Length: 257
Image 1 (tube, rainbow, N blue to C red):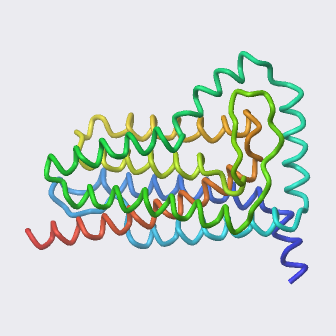
Image 2 (cartoon, rainbow, N blue to C red):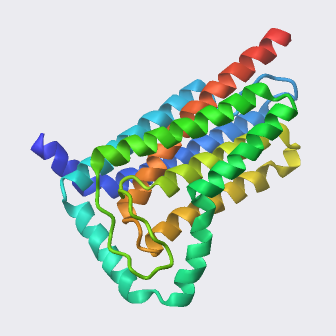
């Protein structure tokens, strides 16, 4: 067991890179299948096998990061070095800009926007998508709270005033929340919007998620591993929910065919 923990601690960052590669590969495969499908073919955006693979990899990466962080090994040392460098490097103007950017992942913003979107989906009779939207976001919120209370990691010291956080640090709620919120919103738009907008939708979602997660580290309210773990948690949950949604939508289309 000690040897396994040492291996995980030494390779936690590489495991996160594997998560990124797997996510990109899964998205590319799903996109190619859609491009080569017939116009009326019930081809899901995310197949069960791909969704299961992403969930498994994301869960493994999250577990590896958790083991490394709780063991206070090399990854924690890297977290501390990055945090110390940022604290000595970034000035007030950049921190102020990042403080505004990070609001895009705040609970208040996400809850307000999610409520408007849910009402809009119900009003336009997209009931399945509306319930999926609500279930995905609520479930993600519960997972974030569960793991924060489980690990109880203390946040890094941040006294610049441009972002004030007092809760637990691991995993990053902003990273997981923004990935699930903007990722799920992108999925809804892919289902409902014309195909000519699809690449822009995906690109915009990726930029927002990356920017919000990065802002948490740069503002020094999270360690680097917190954000990585948040992304792993969010990607696993998002893959599970979109995979389930696509299975239901594909079954309905086949039943009507």
